[in-house]
Amino acid sequence: MPRPEPHWHANPLVRASLALHGLALAAAVAAPPLWPWALAVVVANHALLAGVGLWPRSHWLGPNWSRLPAAATARNEIALTIDDGPDPQVTPQVLDLLDRYAARATFFCIGDKAARYPELCREIVRRGHAVENHSQRHRHNFSVMGPRGMTREIQAAQDTLTAITGQRPLFFRAPAGLRNPFLDPLLTRMDLRLASWSVRGFDTRVGDAQQVTHKLLNGLKAGAIVLLHDGNAARTPGGIPVILEVLPAVLACAAAARLKPVTLPEALA
Image (tube, rainbow, N blue to C red; front, side, top):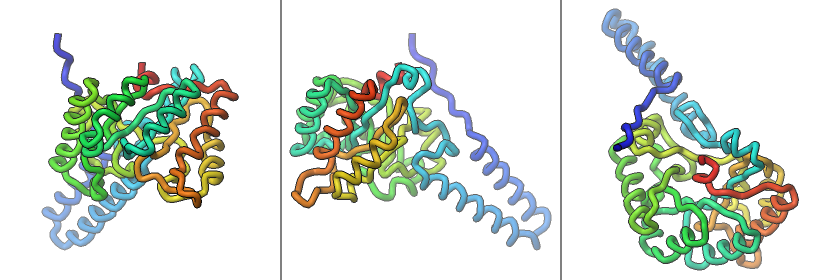
């Protein structure tokens, strides 16, 4: 029996914004001298929406996994999420570290990179991890795209990753976590869940592994979604990708605290 098509419900901020646009238009039509004020209100509203979209952990534009659900938190679970790969030099070493600690992780892969290294993507899944959608090209202007551009990016990655791994991604993470009000209805239609994070160490910019580790360990608790990068990883002064220096300490700390690293689909179940 086919699954019913998901139905999108506008959140309160989007509903209020739509109503505000309607009122501004009505005011400008009914009293033309008021149009500068109506325009100012609309511009302020757009500025608010843009600001909210620049806050990756915000829930104002729709549902967003910034922490694991309550049931997963109660099971003492955490999620290690690893972005911007796969990377042929870094990802295999990350997989070996995860194996050493019997930990599962979620890899938010870029479709174009996955197409270049399909065997590496399949190896991620073979070792028990999840491959999820991080867009097809990781475009830096993703958050200012319209619905068609966003749809192309997300759907292309869905098709690419599903064809490679045989598993349809259930989660999407926007490039840099930035988005706009068009994203939520698109994800609803595609039956995807938006995922951000609860703790990050900025390991694409900070080459000090100790500093990154300190930031991550401070937020390492049940329900945490940890953000790391195997692609675009910063390098330590010795030239080592930061994730390879940081991940052992994070995994050891999680094990000592009896925290169980699981994939996002496992936390969903």
